[in-house]
Image 1 (cartoon, rainbow, N blue to C red):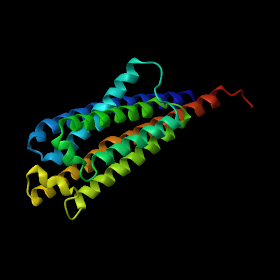
Image 2: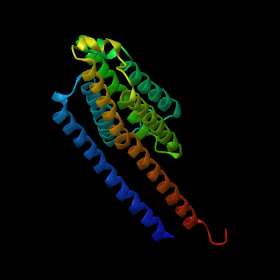
Image 3: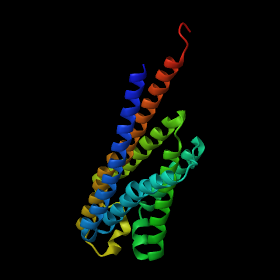
Image 4: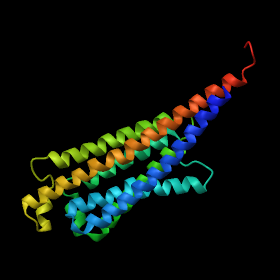
Amino acid sequence: MASTADGARLAQAAWDSRSKLVVAVIVACAVGLAARLGPGLGPRASHMATHILLMSALAPFLAVLWMRFTSAPVLATGRALAIVTLAQLALLYAWHAPGASAYVERHPTAHLLMHASLLATALLFWLAILGDTGVGRWRGVAALAITGKLACLLGVLLVFAPRVLDASAASWGATTETTLADQRLAGLLMLAACPASYVLSGVSIASRWLLDMEDNRLRARTDRPDGA
């Protein structure tokens, strides 16, 4: 039994190491994507690339650093996780609503507010995900799954919409064909980012949770008196 428990702990340690490597790779890829494609992207695709960098790379990276250097968990309750999950999704859809992108493009203050609010809610979301390390970790997996599905839904709408969803996008000075292509590229960027962030993180948390449950079960069986 002891060897099995040790094996489970070693497997969990190996998975944690791989998870840290994956986080580093995601951050590096996001930074490289923004540096490589950012100047050549249209307004909507550029916004989406920035959102991906802030919400799916920088925010979880900062959350991991926060948890690394602080001992007390943050927002480690189901209610807090539900609130920040809804807030993040509400802001994501609100800033991508028709008219919002064109307004942000014309007003630098709104542009800064958009990125700051998305980064802040994403950071709180990942802190709530990482802070819940007990038996209720299924809530984090559920929150990641819901967020990933709704974020991908937004990407699907941008990709397969037969027309430009933002009627005021003509104020950017581009043709309808160029604007539609820019909108579809933004959706493709979101669809590419969802599995690399929310889905992968959910798999990582679920795997660690199952390993912990198995480790605790084996420990309880090992510590049980003979004949009990």
